[in-house]
Length: 394
Image (cartoon, rainbow, N blue to C red; front, side, top):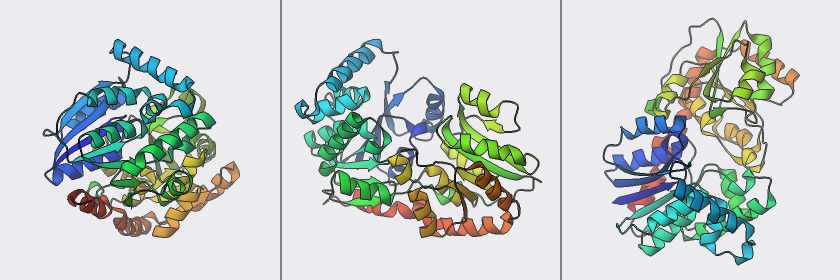
């Protein structure tokens, strides 16, 4: 079968896309990927990842001003569409008003005549271009809903536009994948339940990516990672409390470091910062730690509904999870009976919970967590997706 994957990001910043490409290649399918270059750290890692897929046809667009005409044209169209009231916009122009990358994807796909059995869309700017192309070419369509996108913004106009875009595209899909049950429930309740097939596809990884290692360091090793080490990710609540434990705890942060955040929270501290690590190296690296920090704190509706890839990768690596409370994380931890310490954002509560961590036996908990998390492996969760891909009658 011939697959076309479409994203408004790239391999380094979209692990879900990377896992699906890997799955399709292992199933001996032919793959083409439309993605973007950003002239930042993600391009370097994306180029490293592409080496692992020599048979994949990667088509790349610039998301920056490097191609100035395309950037200027798409920027003008986006701004014009944003000024037009929603009820005057068809689905195409609505998509253009969401993000200029949708325009670049659509313009390219208008010129493509190749046959694809499946068109798979990742991220909202790709939803309409993928939908348009699948209908035009009589291809089957899959849409990945990693987040509750209307809940990512406090701007009511953008919320409504995103809801309308999803409402007008997802019912065309032969299936939709959701990154958490609560995201699916919110989409069904607030946008549309008119979806032919739906799969809960957590942000998990292959079990072979992880090793069960014992930390022989005298300090308990804590780790947190994200694309960016920045404000608004819960670190600003955690770090002041952590600084009371520098003799017993060791904190590692992985990601692209924001300079202002560094000056305010990390400078002159013992915190160890690592540059972004490629997804295929990160998971084995996590096995060197004892505790994984899941510090999302429900800053918006989506943040309260989502299950991030970090909390699952911690569990798969056998790490004890230290987490701020959100509705989705509490439900997830309870459903899979994982080892976790929940804390409020209050500094005294964080200090109290960190004190409790010091008395834990991480050797035993690692073995137990590692075993429990095997139920979350991508090897298991991807089986329903494989069934849908292979079922040509859907």
